[in-house]
Length: 287
Image 1 (cartoon, rainbow, N blue to C red):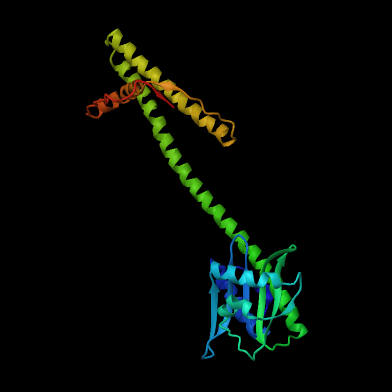
Image 2 (image 1 turned 180 degrees about the vertical axis):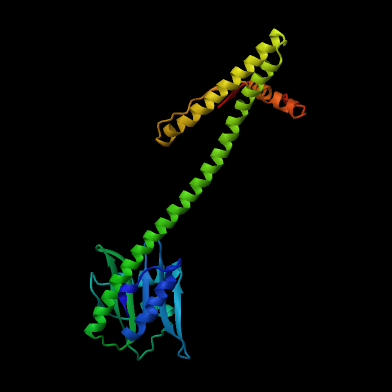
């Protein structure tokens, strides 16, 4: 078994651990269980059925927690150690489909999965009255080390995947924001151009109409300026330097300004703009 090829290949790491455990089983000569715990808990065990069929058991988080609670207190500080299996390791025995008979003695060779002096899990091999050669002891220690690298790489891949999802979500928000901003900028700009064209065409318009049109142009220009300033303030928001300011305005004035801006566009397209205000609308709104 080439331990250098242990690396995360699947989105479900317990499946990869199951494949690793299956390959390690004939080398170690017993049932193998690999458990990783931490922010993400997963594991896998091998076991043999009554018909001698070789089965892989991918462990869920609950089983990982139960097995870890049994084995962690018994683990050596480093290297590998022989441990006698008792009924206290019931979760491990169940995952391996093993039973302790009254006249049977089972031992396990256990090695902590460590990286940078931090326990990330363990590898155990359970046999009946097993005697492990130095080669097998060295093998399980190397297997534990390679499994630690596997766990670290999977953690990095998970972080990268999470970041990619965050960036994808951010790109969606940016696209929606740009679409909304484009619409918001287009409305006052259209109003300005439309009323300028209206003034150019109606040279004989009354002074009152001219002043009303100029006021609409000015209002639309100010609104366009506010929108541009808001865009420039986004950098302050991202830097956390933007402080919200509470303002009070009359919603009727807002409706009137918007209706004036789009009234000419409606007329050009043969549409009639009608504005109806609810009597329950408050005179002032704070935001």
